[in-house]
Length: 73
Image 1 (cartoon, one colour):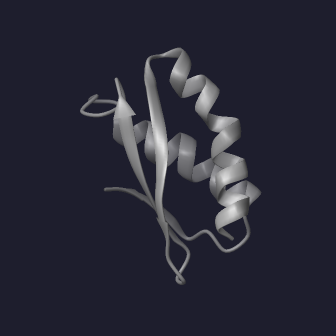
Image 2 (image 1 turned 180 degrees about the horizontal axis):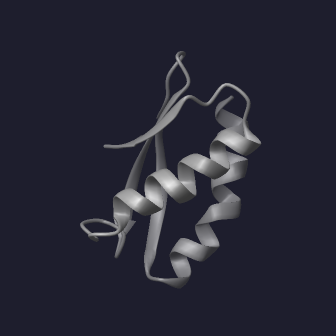
Image 3 (image 1 turned 120 degrees about the vertical axis):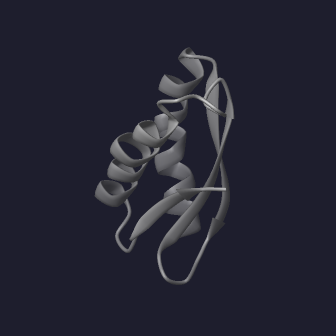
């Protein structure tokens, strides 16, 4: 599952990088929880939770079977 998550994140990264941010994969748990770290302008941004849940989590759930949740660490 980790390889599939990394491939999906690679599709998301350009749009985050266009706004000065980025996302790094930290861990993929056996329970389907994806832990990521938001960096650059995404770190500390008031909209980061919306980006995380409505953007990153939504896309990962669509592209990678077994993803239950995406959390920022």
